[in-house]
Amino acid sequence: MDATGTDALLQNVDAYRRTFDKADAAKVPRTGVAVVACMDARLNPFGLLSLSEGDAHVIRNAGGVVTDDTLRSLTISQRELGTTDVMVVGHHDCGMRSIDDEAFAVHLESQTGSRPAWAAGGFADPGDAVRESLARLRDCPFLASTGHIRGFLYDESTGDLTEVA
Image 1 (tube, rainbow, N blue to C red):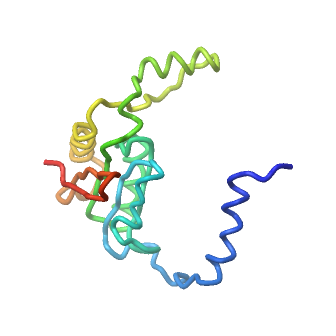
Image 2 (spheres, one colour):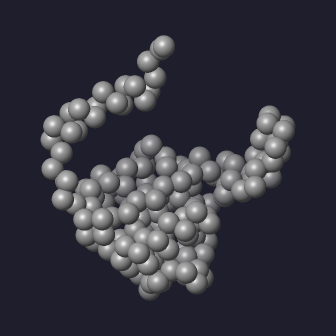
């Protein structure tokens, strides 16, 4: 069997284990923060926010958009694990900017014979996408705390993080 990207990453586990010192990290995030961020490999929320194991919940998906599953995770994060703050982190050069939900669904259906039950969540403007996610969070009746919800845009060319008004 040919080596895969997963196989290459698994070679890193032993080195990680040898220096691992977070066995006592609490299940409840130390900062009280949950971060929703895009899955783009150029956006490293742990490095950007200087997070380590036990510091925050980090929820990632395509576009960093607040989906039903994001709301599920955040509700559990707040109601069961005590987080109170939510940061939504989008970024300027997001691949979701070029995805049209309907065209994507039609394309998938033509390739697989099935149409997805979910929307891709494409958008034209990343700032607007963050604002829409913030509104969805503030309107969610299941979240225990909506007073500390903020949105940001990451610039992958400079490393800057700017708050979205």
